[in-house]
Length: 359
Image (tube, rainbow, N blue to C red):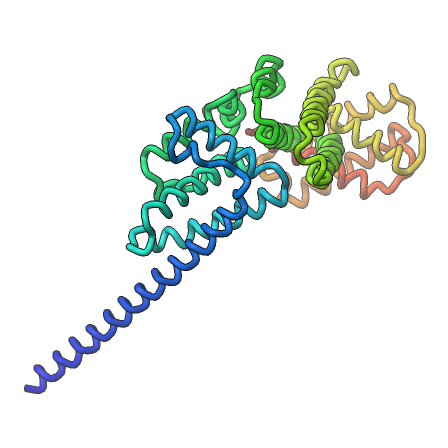
């Protein structure tokens, strides 16, 4: 009898637990439906000037073009882009919870799929990889894939694929494909992604020059993002910005190959730039030919000290590198600047280049 009472109590407790869990799930789904509808309403208001009718009623090609134009609309300003992405992200998180609920009708689902498809395209254009599209039907997933392949966009999106790592992003034919993209805001976002990646790669080779390009690029992007409302819809402003980014890409290409005209190699040019920069910073002059020779000597010291994989974690090697650099600077009569700073700059450059060589 006691066992029966005990078992019955356990069953009642378990039933109460499951009932409570079911109630919590119902409440969570109900709250998620509210969030979805609220954010869907906000997105509809945000896109009230955009005609999305072809996405719902047009031919497959018209649907595809509508998605691309919607992404272009979402990219029109930094403020619109950030607001759209934040709203769509929050709506998706709530929709993941209540996607099977009766409270979401078919019209709601169609609109949700539209905005999430646009979000996937914008995410890919700005971040380089797409978010999860598991909740979308097969047709919408196919449309997203096709949208990202149109007008040459797929060329730049290959950058994130390991199999495409050998692509030369400075190749004239490659850039010509990017130049053919017809949607100005889409083109600008892709060019930004292209240039940002190129600068990041260059930083592994020449930290000093890459930092200069990073600052110029940041200024360029800030000017674009801060343009006035009157300029937002002016195609000439967007075209000028595209040209400025293209020019910076060409400048970066020239800088990367500049070592060849100087009679030194890529790594020696990086050390040359550090030494030349310190001369400007501390306002002293140093003969050009001696600076080239000093850069070569610095490279020899560095290569001799960084032969081991763990060199940057070994205090004995770092101490030896510092002593070697002090001696070579003294030998070449490099002016008495703060040698700790010289060592720090050269150490960071050596570490960058070592990583680049092992990639």
